[in-house]
Image 1 (spheres, one colour):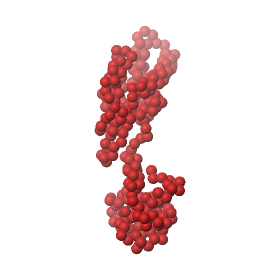
Image 2 (image 1 turned 90 degrees about the vertical axis):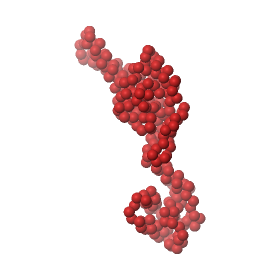
Image 3 (image 1 turned 135 degrees about the horizontal axis):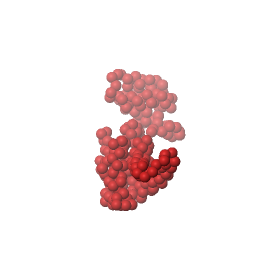
Length: 261
């Protein structure tokens, strides 16, 4: 994992690198402002309901206020970060998300730690320590983030291993050089289901126990196109199937059909 002033790059076990754009201080304060407003509104509503329902005086009032203040100041953020996959209403509005430093989703442990440390960031007043710490480190992390091992990043579309595999597969197909004679075959006769079946074979060919499956698929596709086996001689089975899949998708793109995704 490498860090820069703007991006967090993650190396997966599959040797694929993807990055997150680390949120800046200004954007984080915009999100915090929204959360603070909503937090105060909700807290006022709860205080009003509690004090209207119960007759409290003296130390009881102070105790209830202290207890409710703690529950809100800690529970508000933890609740939303768990319910909304690292986002609070303010972060959602600012398109931010809290993640772990390895790029994985935040868990209850990290959320609890980063929010328990939050009061220290406010010391001695006005978020002073938090601001100083955020200015002193490259990824604008406050003390809570440093303690919990979290980062606040811009919330782009979720990156999963499945999406990375699809992206790599699409890139592989796009880079396949289709033989000229294959490009001249009537590949449009093949259905989407047949192409998807062939594509699944390409992805799983090394884990399949049926060693003849590739030849069976090739035979079926050639028959569907009306191409003799002799015309395809000299082309290895996996390469021939990949060429057919690639050419089919290329024709779909030219014709405005579905693209490889």
